[in-house]
Every structure is written in structure tokens, then in C-alpha cells.
Length: 172
Image (tube, rainbow, N blue to C red; front, side):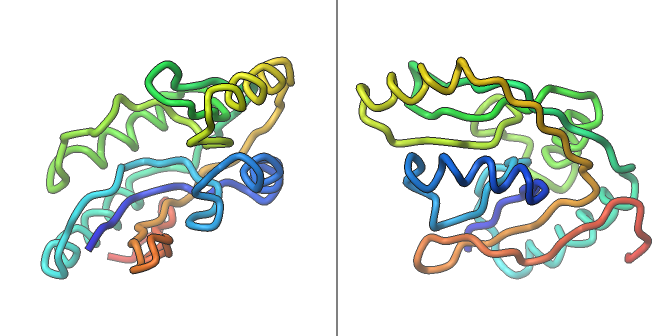
């Protein structure tokens, strides 16, 4: 089965992102707005039984931290994906690093660029128009990160939460 690890931002950010995703993101119906902490990976039930306690340990050792978002960026020319750029922080990088070491595969599919996708799979002209208008817009969004979710992919390619891991809790 395919799994991933993500953080779901607050409602204000979700609403802002969804106002664009409804129209411009081909994955809109498959997963809510999120910040990917670990790209999709294959795991069987036995592997998940090993990883869940490790995720609890990571959450227990992590203190809540803030994220801010001030602008739009893109992965062009690699892809026509437009996203809200989450400002890098040491806390976010440390969490990412923990999810890519130890019992977890440390092979990242892409370099870690903290972001929340607004648009993807756009044709070139639409991409240029949307990015051109969004890059002029100023965003002033913030959130308190105090948990992350282990997700799994359903047969229809949508994602759902397997388990939520709250920071600083003793649930081992």
C-alpha cells in the first residue's frame, strides 16, 4: 500500500489554497491542501507496525513551531506547478530530516522545498497566466504546526488519514 506523511494547515490557509485549487489543481478532489513531509512510499502492514511507534517518538520529541507564507513560487521549468512557498525554518527542516532517517528510507524523491500546492498539470499558456497574476499577490499567512499525519492512498487514488501524531504527547 502507498503511504505518505503530511501536515494539514489551519482552515484559513485551507480556504485560501482551495480558492485556487478548485480551478487549477488536478488533485483537488484527492487530498486537502497540505505540506508534504515525506513523499509517497510503499509499505506493507508489518512495516507500518514498525514505523508507527517511530512516528510517535518523533512527535513526542518535537515542540510545536510556527510557519509563515508570504509568496507564490513555481517548480518551472521542471513542472507547471504553482505553490505557496512556506518560509524555511530549522524546526521544519529538523522534522523533515527525522522522517528521512533511522527506520525511514532516507531517499528523498525531490529536494525539500516546503510548499502547499495551488495549481498543477496546467498547460503552458494557462500556467503563464495563473502564475503571472499570482506572483503579484502578497500573502500573509501563518500557522502553528503541532502535529502531522500518516496518510494512505485508497483505490480511487485519494488520500486519507491513517493516524495523527500530536507533538509533545506521551502516547508510546
